[in-house]
Length: 380
Image (cartoon, rainbow, N blue to C red; front, side):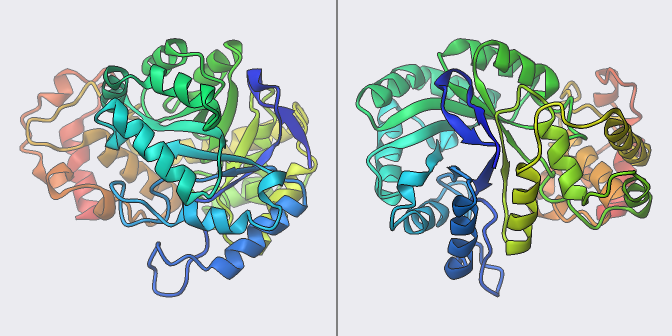
C-alpha cells in the first residue's frame, strides 16, 4: 500500500480510502439492511492490506437525508477488536440539518455515540453548497469547529463540497481547514471544484480527498463498446477501474481516493491499483489512452451544458441543469434511472411551458426549449 501526506495535517494516509456509502446490502434492496458479515470481511481485508482511512457519514445507508443511517453504527462494529486503532476515522456533520449552534454539538455528540469512539480523526462539514453555507456561517460553524478540536472530540476539520468553483474558494478561505473532499475523475475535470479547485486547496495547505473517482461506478465497467475498445487497444492492459483510479492518483496534489467497494473482487482490484499508483506514474502513452476515452465520451454528450446555473430559477420549477446532466449520462453510459428517482414532478422537463426566459441567460447559446423536449422524450 502506498501512502501520502494529507496536507498540513502531516498524517500519512493510504492513497486508497474505504468509503462506507455503498456497502453490500441484503436481498430486497433495503439500503438500511447492510450485509454486515460480508461488509466486515471487506473492511477488515482492506485494513489488513494497509488501508488506514475509513469514511462514513450520518445519513449513509438510511432512508433519506433527514434521518440517521446505518453506516456509522456498522463502522463501529467493523472497527472493534483492535481495528479502530489501525485507522483514521472520518465522518461528516449533516450540514443541511443545522439550524443553530446547538445543533452542531448535538449531532457531533450523537455521532460519537453511534461510532462508539471518543474522538473522530477527520470530521467534515458535509455537502457544502450555497444554501447551507450561509446557514452554517450564521450558526457559528467556525466557533463550533474550534471548540470541538480544543475539547478533543475531533482532531482535524474539513469539508466536502457540491457547488461551484467560486464558492469553493470562498469556503477554503473562510476557515483554517485541514483538508477538503471533492468530486474528481477524468470526466469531471471542470465539474464543481475541479482541477482548479484541487490546486487552489493544495496551495493553501489543505489535504485533498477525492470522492466519485469512478463516477458512482459508471467508469468501472459495462462501458460503451467504443470506450472499451480504446482501453483494449492500449499497450498496457488494465481494467477500466484501474485506468480511472490511476488517472486520479497521478495528480501530485491528490492525497487519497475514496472507493465505495461492495464485493471482495472490487477490494482486491483496488488494492492492487493502490500498491502501484505513484504520483506522475502514467506514461505519455497512458495519458493519450485516457484522452482518447474522454474524447469518445465527449462525442456522446448531447447538450453542452456546464451547469453554470444562469438559466435558473425556472419560473415553472424545471431543474434545467439536472435534466441535461441526466440526459447526457443516459447518452454516455446507457440507462439512467436517476431522473425518476431524484427529480420531483415539478423539476422534470415536461413542465417547460417554452417561455424562453432561460435561453436569454444561457452563455452557451443552448436551445434549451428544444433540448428539454428531447429529455422528456427519453425519460417521460
